[in-house]
Length: 445
Image (tube, rainbow, N blue to C red):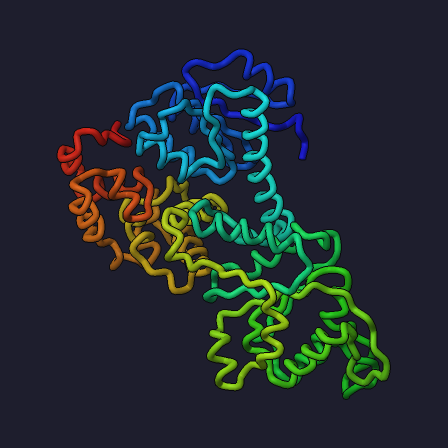
């Protein structure tokens, strides 16, 4: 991490000269902006940035809402500066809770502020490093993107389990990104400089799985013309990721259990054993309790694998992250389009939030990539995503009625940003509802 390249966006109408001087002394390059529009212009998508939002500038409610587009960017670590009493304002509380890594209450030392921004920046930089370096250039869809409560909880769990060497069991639906979580754990662990070896236990024929896991000696069977090192041995010193462990045949379950007990492997056709030091991370979409009851999975093996457990959140529970992920994928793959795309239409945004995403992140990636290629307009529509039947605004109407037209509360209830809700209202001719909530002027203009 090159301290000399650290960038700070300082959002304020009354910048503190002494604070700016302290940031510069600590190696920060500062850009001062005074409103949401200039903040968006100053931010870049391709690098980690520190952000300081000076709430002492007393932004109006509609100004705070306008900042949401900037605050949702996952490459910026935001810290809010407040004074005593400001947290009594519900809009300020929501902004800090939903978008900021931390907040400081003034008066406090300049070093305290710089340290808080540095920590927020560091967390963003670590996130970027884990997602980009671990997967490499060839895995464009291999990034952990999101800032919802479920994803923040997942990232906290990753950091905690990475500090130990105990086996980790990752449960979750297909397509949620369990391998990305395994990679992130490895990259944050003491084994980060050693191999990360993955094997999909459900994608290899049962009679070949033993040799894939443990290897074989020359002449062990017809066609074994030379010794082959198995995946377990190849991971020596590092991490072995056993994906779809719930599909592992019973014969291989017995062999894996023996390895976990002895920490030695014996290649097929061999007569000696080889010590192997690996950390085991396993994952599955299978209901393991049912699998054990039905005798499809050994309970003694499960309890050895599931010392620490992480639950991968399904996409449908990730609220505003769904739109964020879709935009991230559009930015990543828009070069495949035959024309310049300007983003998602309001109907596409509505469909994205209304669809249940049974295929999770993998389904979202596939739909966005197909829409980029097949779209004939300047914006991707719900029809391009093949989600036309999900352009339904009934939930929006119900939320607005429940909260008497208060846009901020309705957006929170729907787990979408206030900006997204405003777009939905505009797309369906419902902007007049704002009249019922004279204190809510968000995103107008």
